[in-house]
Image (cartoon, rainbow, N blue to C red; front, side, top):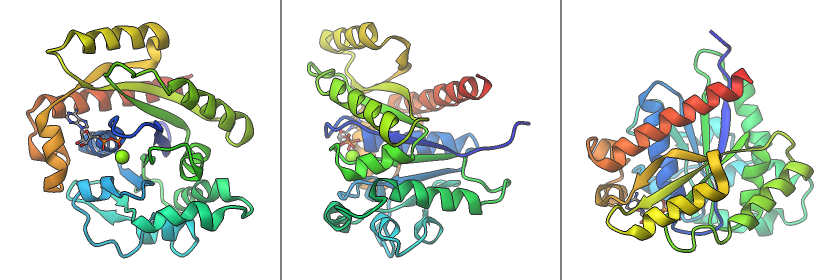
Length: 267
Ligand code: ADP
Ligand code: MG
């Protein structure tokens, strides 16, 4: 067996409503279901990943972690899903940008906190995947995520303007790679909210694959009402309705992510 190592994936796209949070919750759940130890960092002041996982009471939050007032180990809370925990966000996180504005090392706050966690864990109980749910903006929070990540996973909604904004995201990733984090890679692009009833969705899938090639995961997440309903029950869709098409797609995405990880490690 190769040594277990922790992989940090940032779910980023400056567009809102494309499926970042849904993917963080459900990819995280599917990875935990096959035995990975997963930690979600909720880096969006809206706290949708936290609410969607049924976390109501937030004693310590991502803001406290970034502000140096709590460690990740202190702030992380368990969820209903075995092996899946989260550092929840509160609206305080909005003030991070202002609070850290000109502070030294402000881009590396999250990276340093994650490094502390990873160093303190023993090999047997090590977190194997850390998924960072980014806010819908290329702000200091997202820069912290990209500076801390091994790779970026980009959810892209199957809609007419899917590719709009992607160039800006990719150039930001490139800039972070050059300036802050030379190891940063693009893990993959996942197409979300695919609607099989419209030819538009097929056209978008085709166009995105033509532009991005094998960076696009084979798995496409369908638009599925169970996926949309599950957060209001505080559950990942995999706990809410295991058999629905959305759950099955996230299980398939998790196996693709693991397979890509294997290839990256073997390289
Ligand atoms: P983001 O985090 O990028 O802003 P979300 O994950 O919050 O996007 O998704 C935006 C909205 O779309 C949410 O209401 C979510 O429940 C819904 N949604 C996401 N993925 C799907 C899907 N596959 N099928 C149906 N609704 C979805
Ligand atoms: Mg979100």
